[in-house]
Amino acid sequence: MLELGEVDSIKTSNWRCEQDILQLDCGRFPSQLDFMTWASAWLTYLGAKINLRADGADRAQVYFVFQECMYILCFESTCEAIWIESLGEHKSQDVASILLALN
Image (tube, rainbow, N blue to C red; front, side):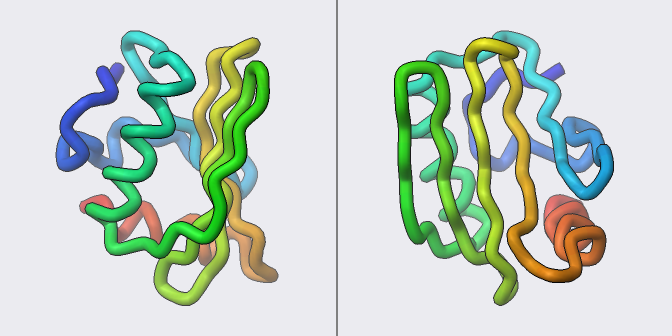
């Protein structure tokens, strides 16, 4: 389990791949504000380009481009989930490219 904090502390072992989605395992689920702050820092650390940030009452999304592929990083407080989905045509390959970058 992972505490969201230092951006370089996230490694492949904290992610589960489930049907072309990467699910993040966190120890203490963050607040929405903490998530948005962490997401911006982490995506910048990865070298991703953030296109759009959107948030609502119990969810937040960050749309980003990584290695020429479009993704969405999602936060859902109701079910306490954080995950990444590819918005491209080759979802499995796209998700695999993020896992490789985390090594």
